[in-house]
Length: 267
Image (cartoon, rainbow, N blue to C red; front, side, top):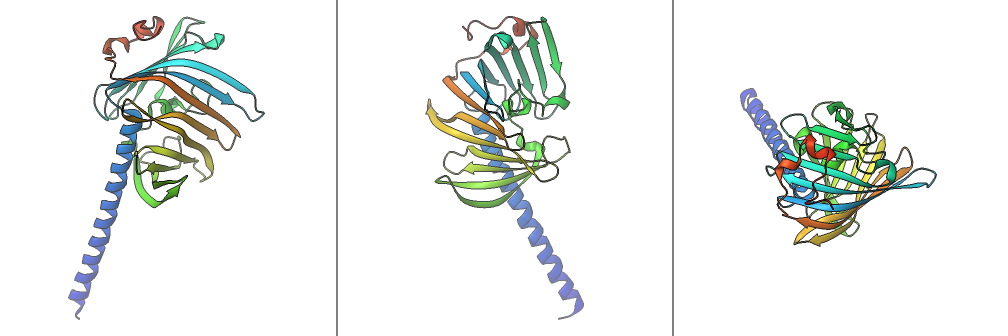
């Protein structure tokens, strides 16, 4: 075989390997997209009551109770969240609002009734703790799949379920995590476990879907846990009174309603 033919074969093999890798990355990205849509874009809108239990390393528990509204302006695209805190007394009437924009910076606002102040939350704070819990502000509305590069690490059985394990690495360093492993249930296509690693490769947080129920024909994670491995503490969130496609008005996702919650949805 002459040199030209050998070079041609090598180049062909390299192109085929590159094509297979690109195809695998596309498959992983599609899986993450589907899991994200199922988790955070179920139906056109939704409302729920939420109980949050925050347990520190000493075992001390704090409770937060709030109502949450969601409206999708576009499937996988612009989306809005409204959260109204009921308990405990020191955070009652506090409201949190998110305008999620996958192609631009998310906008977040917090209304603090004690000082009658609407605070704009910086995009740099998206990794900060959400009301003292182990969930971040970004965790509330979910990290958009397009922010990371994905690849399939393995397929295996986890807790009796067949799952894809996807590794995600941020396209741009934002300090949220170094990499993440997501376990996607092949049956429901929901993320049932997420492992967050810091920039040094150390396991930092673990998300688990503790309970999945079918609500209005939609598989829904109704109990979610986030464990901070490094701080030895965790937060459990339980959703109840879930209702989809209730016709949430777009107008309520404004600063005016931060101070005056919409009684049509929040009693």
